[in-house]
Each structure stands twice: as structure tokens, then as C-alpha cells.
Length: 120
Image (tube, rainbow, N blue to C red):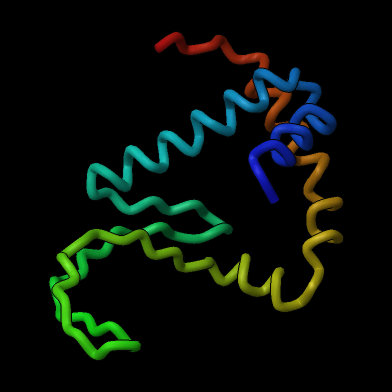
């Protein structure tokens, strides 16, 4: 799945225009990236957790030549899926679940669309 596919889905199912859908997805991903960059964990209920982890510096080895070289310390993002997501993926019922929740999602987005927009 790509951002373009997500934007098309928002366009088709929620009635947003394609530009709004793309902007919504971009803004959502920017917020997640900003939170992780600030060192915060991101928890999406029913989906999973994105956690920043610091990896220490270590020695690496070229498998062909055997030469050692240093690998610098770095931060990495770790994703831990929620039990709900894991269960849906393992059971293969994601299509059934999505169709059952469509009316709830559409209702929530319709309510959100009626709220005043916050200008930043």
C-alpha cells in the first residue's frame, strides 16, 4: 500500500477531494515523524506502537574481506503491532473487519468534517 492508494481510498470512501486526502495523510505522517524525532513514543490504539531505540556503536565486519570497520551509534524506529492488528493479520479477516467498521469510520469522519478547522 502506498500514500497514493490511501489518498484514493479517502477520496472514494469519505468524499474528500484528492488534494485534501493527500494533505491529510502527509500531515498525519509528519506528526508521527516529529513525535519520534522528539524522542516520544507513538501509540496508535488497535494498530501498534512506534518506539525510538538507541543502538550503541559497534564493530562491523566486511563478510568478503574480513576487514573490521566501526558502525556508529544511531537511533532506530521499532514498530510493535498491537494484539488487535496481529490477530486480524493472522486470521485473514481484515477485509471482513474493514467492511463492518466502514459505517463507524464514515460517521466519525463526517462528524470531524463538521467541526471547525484549526488553522496552523
